[in-house]
Amino acid sequence: MNTDSFVFSKRLIKNFHTVWRAPSNIALVKYWGKYGVQLPKNPSISFTLSNCVTTTEVSFFPNDKKKYPTFEFYFNKKERPDFHPKINQFFDYILPYFPILKDHHLVISSINSFPHSSGIASSASAMAALALCVVDFEKQFHPELGEQDFFKKASFLARLGSGSAARSIKGPLTLWGKSPAFQNSSDLYAIPFESGIHPVFKSYCDTVLIVDRGKKKVSSSVGHQLMQDHPFAVNRFDQAHKNCELLKSVLKTGDIEHFIEITESEALSLHSMMMTSRPRYILMQPNTLSIINKVWEYRVQTKIPISFTLDAGANVHLLYPVNESDKVITFIKSNLLHYCQSGQFIEDQVGEGAKKM
Ligand code: PMV
Image (cartoon, rainbow, N blue to C red; front, side):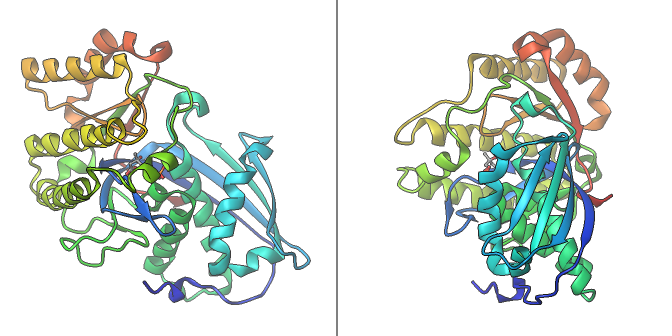
């Protein structure tokens, strides 16, 4: 795999300041299992969100040539050295592509629109926003960098921070990972979904029911590793490939029935992988299952096409067309709130992707 085109070799230094806002995303076909440096074992497709966002401001100051980049990190206006290991690892990974980082001191300040303790992973939006700031800096020396290449490189760098962050650059849907069904697809970066999207999916809603606000007992990094000698890995990767292909036509035609079938199956397959790995573990909680059962009952009774998907955690993402919002929110408030920790839920919707502020 040739990554030479991603190397930025100019060694100029200067002051620069930029601010980017990047959204979170929710996978419809899940990425679970990786190889090399943050490369996916199977392609994945996600909805880009609009309300759950990270806004990151970076100031670059010339610094005497150092061996490593130096930085300060502020989260919600407070200095947070506890985030340094994650950012240091990201800088280690991107340094070969961006060596001038060593010639600068960075002051990074991030704010999340969603509560930090909501159990919603913020690494995708956070890494995407930081990667965009870095590529924006590069563009100052490289004005010929076109829009498409700018976002491709941002996705490439974001991936090195957190795999799913590669999908948090563009919207409303993105595909990450090589798939024979999608021209221009790559394991290195995500691409905007260009195969035609039915209008119903461009405004789809995702309401996140917060079942558990705490930190996950088993991290996603460990989960990805456990796929390495997982007894069902080959079949799982094959299933994800097929589901990407199936979802491609479903998203184009607006076939919600099959959308539900594919995405709910993906969510449960992801959790089945966790339950059948060695060691085995369960991230769903009793309230996760209660919500799923209630959603299934409600769908049968009302014919409202509401469905669920899950991330690597206990929270439930409810997916439904925007024209059903009023009814679904009433249903959530009257039937599902007592399964949510402190009655917390977050309303979100498919969005257009990251923005410079
Ligand atoms: O990006 P990571 O390494 O945190 O992995 C994310 C994996 C899932 O969220 C479970 C699935 C996905 O495709 O986003």
